Figure (cartoon, helix red, strand yellow):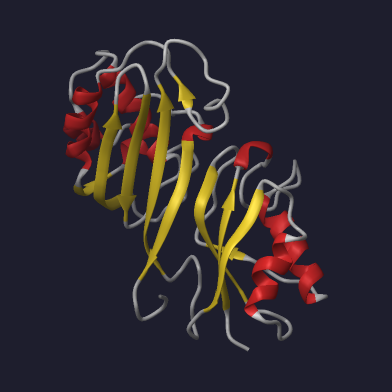
Length: 250
């Protein structure tokens, strides 16, 4: 039987993150429970990467070796019928031999959302960082361009990150929106370090508030986490898409 690849969307508000943990409900545990009901046997679900507590996904990719034959509809519609309302399979497909959702990935795209309105917004509360003081979006957009290319991102990783190298290639960092309204920061790279996007966002928000000059290049060169801005809250972050080389996936 071939490997099954599914694309999963979830609201991470009520979860301790993607990975199974003893201290609360995880997306992985909920998904594996639903898969096991459809398969009538245990299923190990492997994701493209772990999302932290409170982080969302529109395009998390998961692979698993099915213990039995089922039509793709069962892994899509059937699994959805067993999942809580804040998790859903949006697509199921057969993957090539050797496909692994994490190891086969060649890049990821995240989106961080900020609500910069003058008052709190119930419609944005679960999916955006609410910042009521106006931000200079143009200054943030200019500074964001300094992240592009290959750099050592040691200054933008969380304590405890066990990545073997802190060098990453940033393909895209776009800041769009308006001061006093919705702002989106789109980030695409070959891979990310722990809390890297959230540290980048916190630094850009500092620049948007005029707390620091556009010193991204200096902070990168320092390799010192203390030189970058604060870590943005998790609930504004969403994994939008995972990319794969043609040799290992669609």
